[in-house]
Length: 175
Image 1 (cartoon, rainbow, N blue to C red):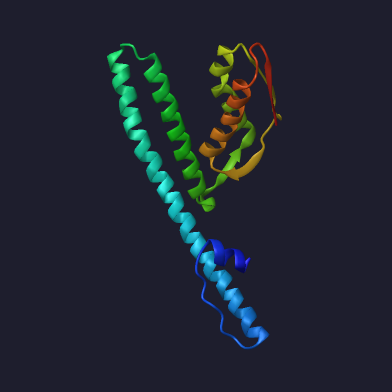
Image 2: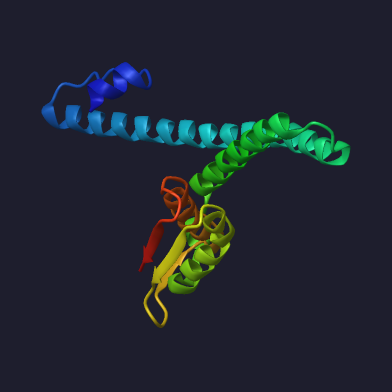
């Protein structure tokens, strides 16, 4: 692990020890130092991703608004901008999910959350004449988490199932 860290992450201080015990302690200190630097790099990466995503979303949203107001030949441009905006939004949500503080998680009824996600996917299923079959437990299924992020994750799973299913199919949501 130390060799990998030395080659790929940072320049670790060389250990200048004489006994095996001192050498072992020096290696432990090197791993701690590398871990700390890796945490800093990960935090910087997360912050940068959030800024990039935000900076992408603003001009795309403005262009979409201008297209909506103009109502001229917008089909191709609108579709491309909508896709780019969705990608930027997904990117932002992913970076937010990475930065979330788990100490702020709350108890959530996962069964209700799943029902809501199925309801939110209804229009997409209707467009492809897909039936959404629910096999969700009666009662409540409690877990700790962030409602918005979990609901988005479940909705994404359902929408992907709809997207990749043939028309007139059935998608089963089972909890």
